[in-house]
Image (tube, rainbow, N blue to C red; front, side, top):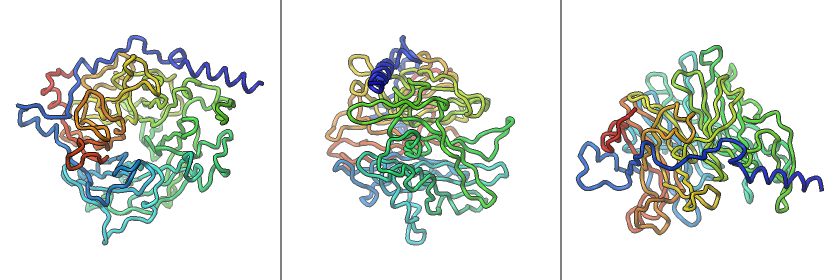
Length: 483
């Protein structure tokens, strides 16, 4: 009886996420300053200097690079990193997450790509068996050396999987002529917090889910001590049971080997575990920050403030029950402010953020999530404009509904599996975009989706492709005056 009472109380709390924190009562979706820049199709008469904004640059379209998902040819969930020599490395799975990792290199700013693995440079065996979407980062050490690292979670999916075996990580092992990582050769994956960290099949016990890593690491940010960067990186991921965000600290020992700290909960770490039952399953939630669990935070991005003294954590709300949330830390991620909602224009999934060195603007790519026709956000009452880029200021993150930014850019239309027409709303199976910015301010962003209509060469396929833009060109074409 006591369990049923607790269950009812918690379910009532979870049903009212807007009352608990981060209300956005006055939020109305009016993109940026009223400008939605749509790059889906080039209008007649577009000036030549802006025509590149509409171009697609597929990353790998030969049959060998496609897997199957729901009976469709499919590539998904890319991530990318800008190397010191100007090359761009893109990693993505050969299907929906759980599949072979593909790595492609561009030497021309994302216009064309080649496979880094071949007969003379074979792919590590473990790359054929990755269990989740890969992420990739460049680590700059304080002594001037660097490493590239790719990470892939090993979650315990409901019907198949590894029962929550932590995550796999691999580092690059080859350097260019300047002694910097060229990303061409990689070590075999090394597993952390596995195998069988949960130990019993789908055992739902307090704390077991913290090894159930999904999108590891959605963020990997270098930390400071006494105001200076040190050789420590904070990594974030979430589990697929309670949608709790966990953090772990990456360091390297004297032999250069990776060491990851025991995962701990990012928010509400001192709460007590409580149990409730629903539909025959037992779920676990901590007592603190109940609204966090109700909204199902996940796929967190970390953005350092322009002055370098603050971290912002931007959360996806997997439950579609609210706008996206943001929280701030002034102690390098040890403690965080109470999460608050951001503007509808910033509401989306799998945010990736970079600064433009030319304009100083913050660029954030994401899968757009908008309220349904009834104006409400809920798991079955939402629509999507597909893959978008938000352009604004860091301070917009703190303005709630008023943090609309300068522009929202629909980067390309994502068609339904039988779609032939461009519509206002789009297939939401997109986003997870690799994002880099070149020294001249060219934003190079890479995502996956059904970007071609049925009947065209790539129609019906879900594939990875790159878009380029400069913020100044977008603003000039759209008639937007940047703040």
